[in-house]
Structure formats: structure tokens, C-alpha cells
Image (tube, rainbow, N blue to C red; front, side):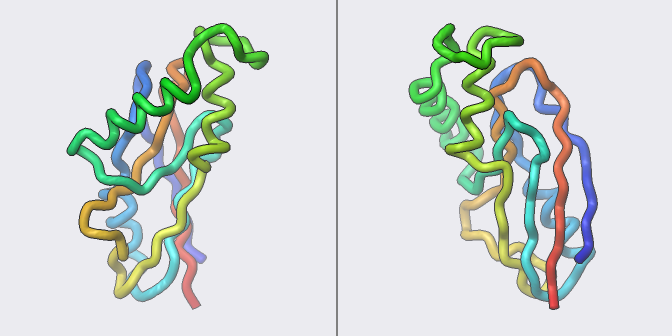
Length: 135
């Protein structure tokens, strides 16, 4: 298994952050066939495979806002208003994804991208671990 980490600045707003390029570069450096696991070791971030740039990222944030409102209902209540919802979000968008790699290239669908989903405006820096598994 080969592994590497990199840092992502998601900023002080809710965000869907594209990391496809970093995933592609790592997979290409590993070469061959295998599986790429993308993992964010954070209790308030997730990894999603979806189309970006066509409005889907904004739609996802809007849906999460409706599903997990930033209000005072959350028992986990430190930090910014509604912070507890950020700790619930990974139950819906897990902190990991696995992508097949064929001949060093991600086997994503035509419109799929790899993205970090981050609702936590209190933590602006995220670490991502990429692990390539092959036989």
C-alpha cells in the first residue's frame, strides 16, 4: 500500500471542495490497477463523489442546510451556531470513498469528481489521506 497526505483549506464558509486533481496525480504516480481510498480524518467532514460546477455542489449544500439546519437544536453545542450538525453530517456523507484505478487512472464516471464536503466553519484546514491498494 502507498499512502500520502495533503492539506486543504476549505475556508470559513460551508463548502464542497474539489480534490479530483490531487487524487488523479497520486493514482498516476502509483500506476497500475488498484483501489484509491480517500479519507478525511475529521469528525466534521465527508468525502463525496458527484458532479461539480453545474450547480450540484450548491444543491448539496442547500439540501444539507434543509436536512441539518444551523440552529440551536444540537446538543453538541460548542463553536459557531449549529456546530453540532457538522458532527452529524458524516453519518450522511462518510469521511471516506473508494475509487477504482485502472492503469493509473481513476475510473470515475464522465461527470464524477471527488470532493470534500465541509459544513464546519470553525475548522478551515483539513487533512486528506490518499491510500493506493494493489496486489
